[in-house]
Length: 314
Image (cartoon, rainbow, N blue to C red; front, side, top):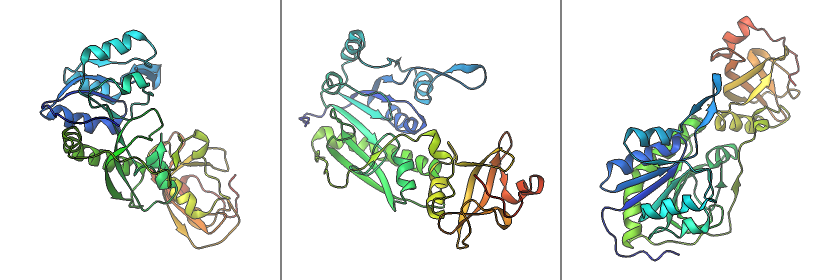
């Protein structure tokens, strides 16, 4: 547990983050009275047509605000540790960085490393808490601010902020709502922590669950599953990687929206208006994106690509 006392304002902050989720928290820090001395993010990656090298969203935001950016692949090199020591941060704020911090980094700042985690810890420690909580049908989630230790999201929690899960939304919308919540609560949480007015509370082991990374294979719809489970999968994995099935012609069809139907039929059997039988009840597919095509209503897709009633989808 970090000894927090003697709050100095402004704080010298190093921010470590990579994806879109981390952009809003960094923006809030930049606008605050505190000083973002440097940003650490994952190295540029090649993607898209032509395999162009692309910076992370956090990288681009830091550059646009003239903040030094460092992209070590890890902290095994001595010079990377020395560079961070020379910056001499009071605190490191970590948000979906994607690189494990060794003990020598965790213990470097005066106030330690504070992690922004998108779940109500100890539930859904790990890489994919937003998707996993929706896939499981949780009624609520939230943001936890955690003092990092050497375990995987096991450090003491200093604050939690709950958000109800609306299953009219998809994973992308919940992602944005959680990022906004993290941003709006970040500054006063940091200041309360370093001043000693907010205390670190050790995590309970009861109720701990692990949110493993989403595998590509998980996005393929298995019609043997219950309609409710497939519905939750569709909500959780949209807009990316988007659950999909193969049409009778072997084309991949992404499912963007669906509804549970009480009808019972064989698993994978196509009924009227692209209602498909599941292991329990059926799923009425509402919006799709065919392979190489644009997003559309399922009924519009069927006009140009009829699927015979009674067909069995693999």
